[in-house]
Length: 456
Image 1 (cartoon, rainbow, N blue to C red):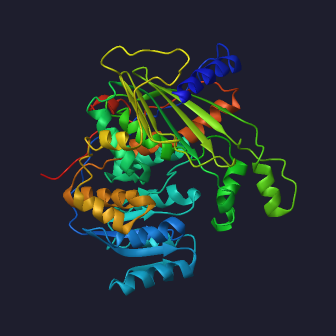
Image 2 (image 1 turned 120 degrees about the vertical axis):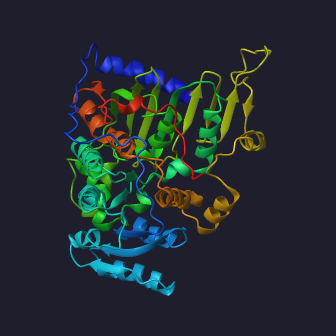
Image 3 (image 1 turned 30 degrees about the horizontal axis):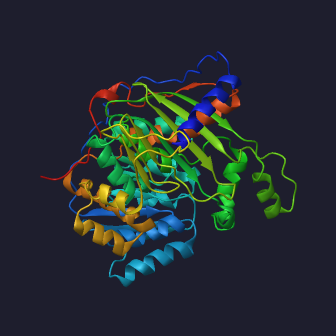
């Protein structure tokens, strides 16, 4: 429960930072005439989905390989500004008897891929700044899109994706693999079955020391982004799974956000080590904390830290009226006791806690419906962050094959990504509260409870 105390301490700090601060309002543009919401939208089924993968670096190259194992689809085209990367993905598929079209040579080669009649789904794995332009062009040319995280960086981009998806009636899916981690999937099922009572608070994070990786990113674009921007720049790994547990856009919505950060202590050092020049304009703090509150009075705490040497941690904690579960820093659950227990005030850890094998035994009773034996075996064989990447891809294609609503829609994408700009707005205004826009424009209460769609 240590992080619950962190929330209370942070709230006190924020009150001191911005006493009686008026909330900063954000615009919700009216839905354009003729458009309808995409809640539970289902497109016509596609028996064999032709996929065009744009961006073939670390994520895109591995996506091509994973998708070659997913039933009901084929890699129809590949695209990268670097010809050698495009050739490498072509060679991989060619060795498996498939010859995808290759588009390369310039930064607009993706347009030809989006115009390819053999492509049904554009799978976007570029650097962050190209996510939105590729996705918008793809939808405008009749393609469904799936976008790597973070899928958008600004409110303007989020609204552009929402409006284009609504107008074109094309899926716009965020590729949030952490929603398919085995632990998160099982904890979600436990929450849905009432094991923890009502979920009233959740925590998520992206705490990942990127020191060894700064030289691996193409032209170091990720470090450049942290230098140029302030806020939670990578919120969705921690945020997405807890939003599902809180039924966001399926009976609840976020209303208010507040952020706080440290000064940039380590960031300038990384830039100076790379360039040999002094860095005096690094924007992002080493640690950013963001709190959100929902329409129904529930809260979320997010953290972002890619610059300190603490261990990898997505936090992932669910706090309910009758129980608690966490994956980080180690797996643990605590359920309300049925009877009174002998309490020793000298022993502050007297709760009935499930850890190790007892936690495994408890979670084994609540298998997520997505996790069939066949899919689990395939995921463990193909891999991708322990299998969760493959499960994400499988569900994306399965829903397209059967004409079903996607697990994650364009409103989830917008809500999970808008934290980046909203946290910046809060930070630049003395940690002021900021209104979270309703990307559904009132449709957030249309469906009650998160669920997966399956073919009958």
